[in-house]
Length: 175
Picture 1: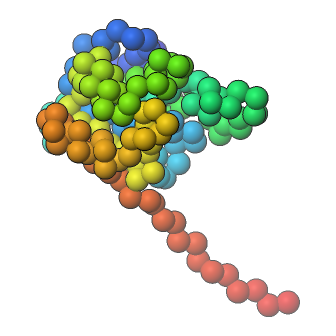
Picture 2: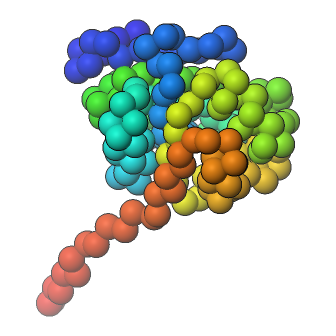
């Protein structure tokens, strides 16, 4: 897949190693439903780290949404479907997207195993950017701090993006 706004944008799916154009990628990790300002801050952090390292930047996301896997009986409202999300990633300046199938084998590993097996061995990342509230691994035991510690131990950079606060001016109305 490519996008009109970024014709070289590449989408990788599956369990194999990603497209060679994503070798040594810096990933912005998350579900990114809506690709709102907070998500754009995570993407911006990945893009900045990728530029610093001279590497490509991509979103690492999951389909179906993990909530659909864990609670299939509950309806899931989504702001953006996968196709729209990929267009938004391309428009944000990313080089690509890695879409992992969220299923039992992906939900089961401990956080350290996810880092080792998925992020390092399968994807070969050079860095990662996550939001302050990112969780991963079995029972959501992995936190941004766990990922940062694993990155320091395993030799890849991790940027943790704080909450994005939006200030809305207070309006006074008289009646």
